[in-house]
Amino acid sequence: MQVLSFRLAALWVIVIGCISSGLYAQSRIGASTGGDVEKLLQPDASLLGASASQAGSGFAADNVVSAEHYFLGPGDVLALEIVGPVSLTVPLVVSPENVVLVPRLGELSVTGKTLAEVKSEIQRLVQSRNANNRAYLTLQRPRTVFVRISGNVVAPGMYSLPASMRVSSAVAIANQETMPLSKERLPVNRSLTTMSDNAPSGQYAIPYSQRNINVLHRNGKTDISDALRSRLTNDAAADGVLREGDEIYVPFEHEATRNGALLSIAGAVQRPCLLPFRRGDRVSLLIKAAFGLSDNADSAQIELLESVSAGASGNAAKTMTMARIMSGQDDIELTAGASIVVREKVENIKRFGTVSVLGEVAQPGVYAIEADRTRLSAIVKQAGGITKNAHLPLSSVTRREIKSLVFRTDAADLSRNFQYTTLTPEDTLRYKLDETMRRPIVACDVAAALQGNSEADNVVLQDGDIITIAANPRNIFVFGQVNKPGFVEAAEGKTVEWYLNAAGNYAPGADTARVRVIKAKNRLWLEPRITTGAAKGTSIALEAGDQIYVPRVPDANSDLALKRVSAEIQEKSLQVQKEALEAQKSMQIWQIILSGIGSATGLYVIFRDLLRTP
Image 1 (cartoon, one colour):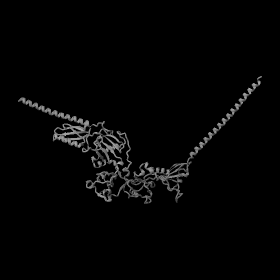
Image 2 (tube, helix red, strand yellow):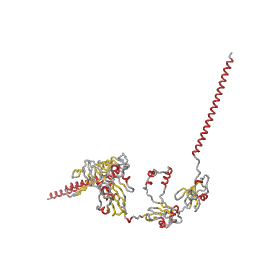
Image 3 (spheres, helix red, strand yellow):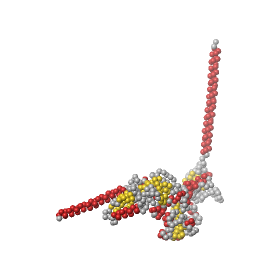
Image 4 (cartoon, one colour):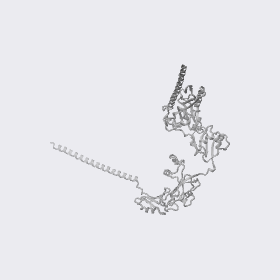
């Protein structure tokens, strides 16, 4: 009996030890597995393309991976968790043979299979062993694949990118200015029949190539990537993810516009636009492409006009409501050339805005107006009227101008204005200067509007206008060739001669015939007296803030002076040369005389010696 008890106790100890060892081993497996998972999830910098890894230590994500459309391939890191009596978490890596080794289940091929299909198959295998077990499979890190991008992109070439990236994102990367993996740089050809050139003013044009990206897979199948439909309808299949060896071709505009079919949406929408037609497009897609309806849109007045070639009778439009479109009842499939117009609400046609009143008024600030209805005098009155220090001749109304006007875009467009001009080059140069310095002010006389009851100058205000009531400068500035240049206190009715006398009159060198008055309001340079019309010879009216400029007498003609100096130098040079020649001639004469004297002396000596000889 004692022996039996001892054996039972020993057996119990062995069972407890086995269970403990199993639990310890399981915990060690879990710990090592967790470490392996963490190690596998560390990105391998050697496998990442420069463009994919420059944002940080991990991949930049451009979308949420759809298990139904993500095809597994070599290098994908998966995490498998089996939940049951004994739970197990292990990492799975797809081998270069495109298989995964599942613990206790063996080898599983993933060739041509999506992540969702592999999930279902592993779940089926796990439950075939134990119906109570559950398997959970997830993608932990996508593999890196090589794809070739060509066609209408800035930098065609081979790219190393994560397989979770959409085709359209890969094309966007190839259109960046700098791309380390591709040294070849080609200009993007958008000059042939581009939608931007043909788009009506104020309508945004979506490029044809955005909806027609061709993708050739390694297995020989071809897909068309439609980035617009994928983004607007959340359709992952329309813009698939990358696979090994994909050939991506972005068509040029002249290739993508062979049929020339377009869709358009206009009216009370956030962004009126044109977009290329593709079979399957619906009304809701067009509304989403326009960023939805605007605040003043009539959601019950959405008109669809289909092209006559599609069988529509004349120009009859189908009226729909936004509620029926979003419910699917009126979300009909469009035909090529269809257009949608969203009407505005009648009660919202009135437009309201604000204007700013600055300067010498009792209550400066921002005031509400009814656009294209409220007038200048009404707002100044609402601001408490002008102060005693106000100077209306210098007051103005500034208007916010549209910067998209052709003549305000850039220097090249500005120069195009001169293509057919009949003016002289000096006039075009002056135009360029005036255009650069011009101010966006409203053509009105504030003094006539507020004090003279001028209906023409009491302008209708627009949203964003700025009314500036200037302060009285109380002075006129006289400068140039005067004896006492500076400020002279303005006096009503005084002439230019009066102010010149107050400034000490003309200084030596003043050109009295070219005195000019510079008006403070518009910077015009005027002669002191009116030269044309019925008031010819009358002194112009001077106002506080004006300037009087007295120029110098123009200097002598510099070219003539240079010619005179040059002639004097040349004359002196000729005189020196003449004197040198005369000196040279004199020297030659003396040389001849001395030579003759020498010769005569020699002959005398010879004859003398001959005479002395016996």
